Every structure is written in C-alpha cells, then in structure tokens.
Length: 350
Image 1: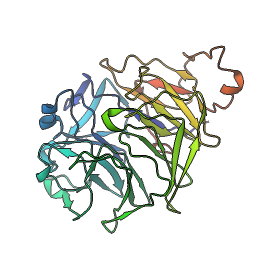
Image 2: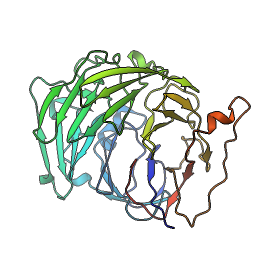
Image 3: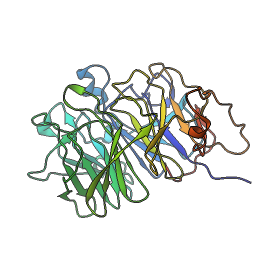
Image 4: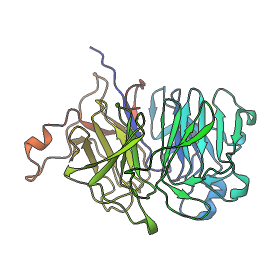
C-alpha cells in the first residue's frame, strides 16, 4: 500500500554543488520561505561583512515538487526582480501566495523599509510592495512564526541601538497592522533562538543567545499561547542538549516532538535531539543514513520516511549503555539522512 510521506529540509549551507542555472553562494543569516512547493531564499552573507553586498542581494527559488538530488539542484534566479536592499538577519512568513519579509540589517538601513511583500504569482519588480510603520521597532536575528495570517516576532536585536529584546511583536498580514503580545512571564531577552508552532496553537521557544553571543541553555523552554496571549515555562529533563543558538528546529509528523539540529555554541554540529512536548523530556533519536561534517561541500535532505519501494536504511547510531531501552521506546519513527528524493508530497511538518 502506498503511504504518504513528508520531508524536512535542512539546508546546512549553500555549498559548492552542481546546479542547473544559477549557482547559489554559500551563506547564512538568510531567510527561507515555502510557498506552493517553492522555496524562496533571499539575503544572507558568508564569512565577511563585504559579502552582504552581493550575497545579501541574491533572490533564488527552488521547486521542490519535482524529484531532485542535492548534487544537481535547479535553482531559478530572481535577483533581477529583487527590490530588497542587501541584508541579513530578516524574518519571513507566508500568507496565501505572498512572502512577507520583516526587519533585518542592511548595508544602508536608511534605504530599507520595515516590511516587504512579494506576490509570488508575479514575475517582475512590480510584484513587490513595501510598508513602513512609524514607531515600530525594526528587529533582526529573530524567527518569525506565521499562524492564521499573523507573524509572531519575538525578541531579536534592535538594529538601531543593538539592544537585545524580549518583546512579542505581532504583524497581521491581512490588515497590515502591528500589535504587541503579553510580556508577563515572557522569556529573557534573546536572539537566534529556535521556535516552532505546535498543533495546539502554542509557539515553543528554545535556546538562543544573549550579549556577546553567549548561548542559552535548553533545560527550560517557553510556550506562548497565541489564542490566550499568555506565556508559560516548562523545565526539561532527559538527555538535555548543550547550550546553543542558531540551530534548526522542526515539528515531527505526529506533532508531539521537536527535532533540533546543529547550531552555534556547541562542538557537536551533527547531533540530533528530540524533545517530547507531552512530557518535555529530551531524547537522542535513532538515526539512519550518513551525514558528513557540515563544513564540507554537501547538502542534505532530512526525511522521516521513504517511499515503500525504497529499502529502509540500517541504523548508524546504536544506543550506548547509558541509553536504556525505555528511553528509546518512545521513538515512533526513524530519522534518515538522504541526498535525494524521488517524490515530494506536501504534508504535516513541511
């Protein structure tokens, strides 16, 4: 019986890969937005501040609805119609066919508007509109969570004075207006944290960094209820990951686990961890497939399932003596590292 499967994408870096058409530059501090099976990637830099002038202006798109191999990706170059100044550290969201880009740091902040909106159904500079809201803070190095037409923009850094914040700014993509969420019991100020929307409409916030890029712990996580506009904190247990920031975080297919990968402030760049949000226990998942050092010239796709006709990979991680069988019994699915997918079907967790 053919089963539906879903995939998670971790674009570690844009490395030296074989591409058809445009060859993307290596980068970080860019935004990635999935709209109608297309990944829109804009902004970023690599190693030096001067790279923002070129890489920060690039605007590229990848169609993930067709079979693809990470060694031969067919990127579409949209840089010629990009109206956003070169920038890093922005936040993005999707609403219907529109991509919303908020904040970030530009080489000339006087030229950059607060909000850029791109209609993906168009293919020209006329597809962009801009919005400036007097009195609203322009922030960078934060994660946008979009839910029911709203962008939730917690924390980040005020680009005018470099102050690290812990406010909750909410942008309505329908009315194009800003409001503020509650600060009662909110997390401490932070940037570069992990954030995931849960099925119950709570946003979970993990880790991050404070002044001088000091990483925060993951022995506590914070929940923001988007319906009730209130905060709560949960203490975690189990195999708690080391302090980190700028890591990837996604929701599992069953909606009960947060899976994190990589980050800064940690020495183990290839480790995967699961947080069970039913009991807030950290686990080390069973992983198949091989991933090399993230600094090499490769990209990977992270998937929790294969099409039925493909063989199931053998596990590469075996539990140690300290990892009891009871700890692993909660793992409902395997995690696989692969470099190609023969089919993509949108679904939960994408």
